[in-house]
Length: 184
Ligand SMILES: [Zn+2]
Image 1 (tube, helix red, strand yellow):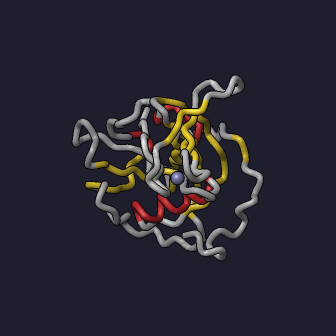
Image 2 (cartoon, protein in one colour):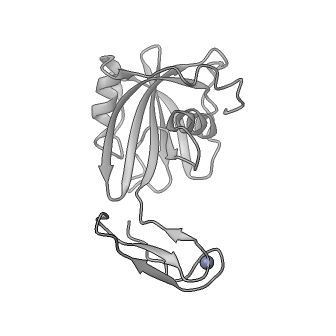
């Protein structure tokens, strides 16, 4: 993901590339205001939610094959703890309320840093049929762990396996009451 900007998105003046010996790649700085563009990676949080030997999966409309499924996931917003992203995205995409309990791993690909959590249903969740609440999805559903459908992202198998084996790292509990904080 290498997007190149030529003009300031704040004031419209030209951006100048700035090189610093301590930086691997230059950033761009506005010639008029102090606006800067960093060519940073994007961060995505994905979540393995299981309940009673079933896993919560979604089907995205941009999947290369419409039979493929993936973990609920989305971009981390500015000033958002990725654990909050995990809760928010699962809620937005499926209507299910969950709480992250472990981090299962990290993956880097094509400018995207993926953080994968294991989550359990929160006591605020009724176990309704998940709803497809956002336009980027075709379908959502619970699938038996012994019969997981073909996945869009092959690395998701690794994280699902770790979640089933309880091999993630525990979180520090800083999001003890996310629903009281109005996150989801
Ligand atoms: Zn500017």
